[in-house]
Amino acid sequence: MEYRELKYQEINRKLFFCFIRRQEVTHCWRKMGGKWEIQEIPFIDDWSEEDYILLVEDLRQTIQNGGIVFGAFENQALKGFASVEGHLFGAGLAYLDLSHIYVSAEWRGRGIGQRLFDLSAAWARGQGARKLYISAHSAVESQAFYRAMGCVEAVEYNQAHVEKEPCDCQLECCL
Image 1: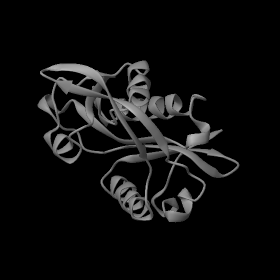
Image 2: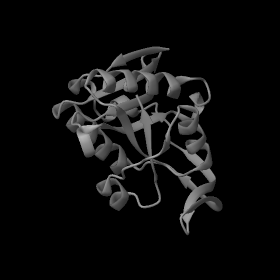
Image 3: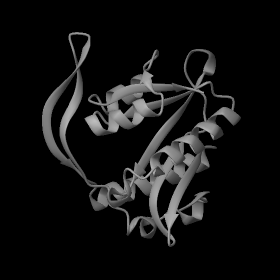
Image 4: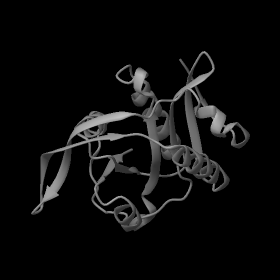
């Protein structure tokens, strides 16, 4: 597996032709009455063509705004990616936003997400961040990954993320 920083001109729809977003979700974490609990919420999470087009625009914007995008490649095909936004935020400007981290369905569970997370954390630390902020999918499997990376519930919620994805779990990871 090759891991590297992606350049603006590399990020296009063709980059994702071999990428499989699909995730079959059965249970999710929900905060009920101030306490986290697992609920049965079955659905299939996948991206439409429009979602991929928006993703390309979003990742390009990340780079234009001083952030970074990392890719994991097998035989020149994208199998995972992560992006970190370039602007510190929060009280004391402690946070950088891990805005995306995904591994193609057929490659999950092989350490690719961990390597992308580690690259993102190291880059964020180098930019002066003390914490990574993650508005994370609430699926039990997704949350298990973030917990294994050392993430905990965010001390300070980013309201823009909460409004955009109200079912996400707002996490942070100390760097």
